[in-house]
Image (cartoon, rainbow, N blue to C red; front, side, top):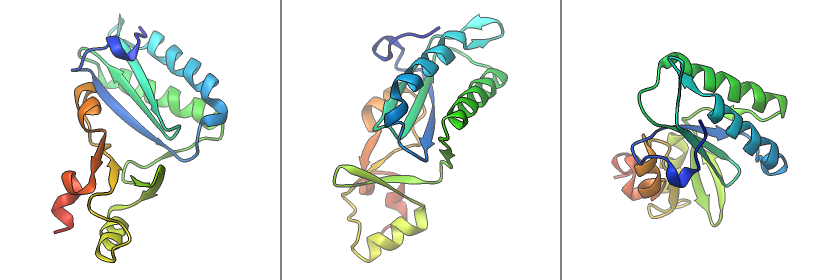
Length: 157
């Protein structure tokens, strides 16, 4: 059952999808699709209160309250991937890290970021997307972090 993001519990679990391409041209279709996924999301035949956020047309974050079965998580994942594939939008591996370059996001893997920090091409106080969030509260508090305040800090000292 879809609920607006503002009304979903801060304890709601989340799943982050990094998109290979911008969904700017598909935003109306994607919003309709995500509402449909949320409206039909069930676990053990019970409706799941769920919502979503789209961030900078490159991330989709699904949120779900209560206990949710692995099968229902897999089902929503499969539906989302299939619908995005129909729009020729791929989901990137979660190993890619979004780093802000001014207002744009560039995607790098961990070794590349560490190397760029060593060369001074990326500063430790640059902002990054924290895809390790587990729930809505973490999304609200730490979705965008400075690199030196993230899990990457351990690798750049």
